[in-house]
Image 1 (spheres, helix red, strand yellow):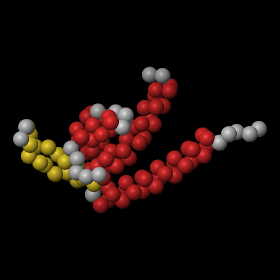
Image 2 (cartoon, one colour):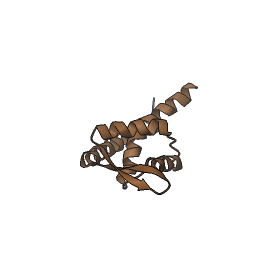
Image 3 (cartoon, helix red, strand yellow):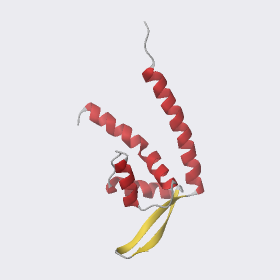
Length: 113
């Protein structure tokens, strides 16, 4: 993997949790639907990455889930943000806005000598 590809992968990883929490904040959702929404946004995530992240977020008190019976197989877990998760996401949104401004400020200014 080239240095550029590695840097790009690290940047995507850094926003993964924020994007997943944002998707879940829109309403109760099944993990494969999260993967689909991430794919639609060109942010690829695989089950091997998503499930451990969901478990970590649940253990941190940011998510809850409920089991829903399925006609086509085993019961499914549907995730939803907890009130703590909603507050956490709101703080991430503020942090993201500040970061975007800072990055824009430092990358879009023309340098004068």
